[in-house]
Image (cartoon, rainbow, N blue to C red; front, side, top):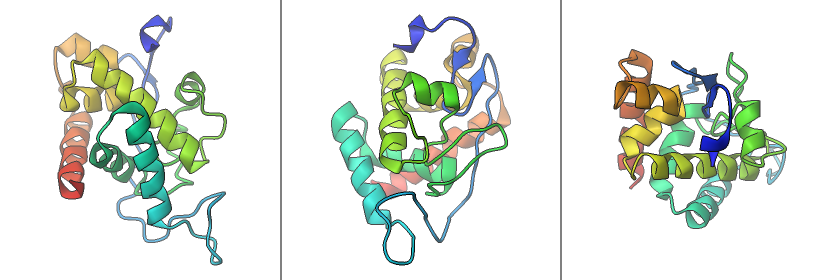
Length: 171
């Protein structure tokens, strides 16, 4: 569990004791990948959906919630990189990726499995509350605990709202 990690709190989008950073590519029209590509070099959304289903089964996180995170974090762009250095579909920072066993954050299967593992840990930590787990994914669990709920950061509040909206649309 990440509770055992000393020092700053890991977040999917960064190492933080407060705010976080996310990449939002919006609706990417072409999803590329290092593997599982078709002849044109793009990865099908079906392949990404299959990775999401595998991660959902492995960690017990609803697939529509995972897909909502992927949509908000990267716009389904396998090669997305944020200004803060978060990488891949679920925008994992190097430290978070390493802690979740991800050796190649641009491998979509590894990224989705690692990001979902982390999200699962946050859901457990916050009693299954999806909004709090998402806020922690974005701003860090320390920020959620400090404020006793979703932190008063506009970016984090917007993030939680958008991910839950996407998740509802994918349900």
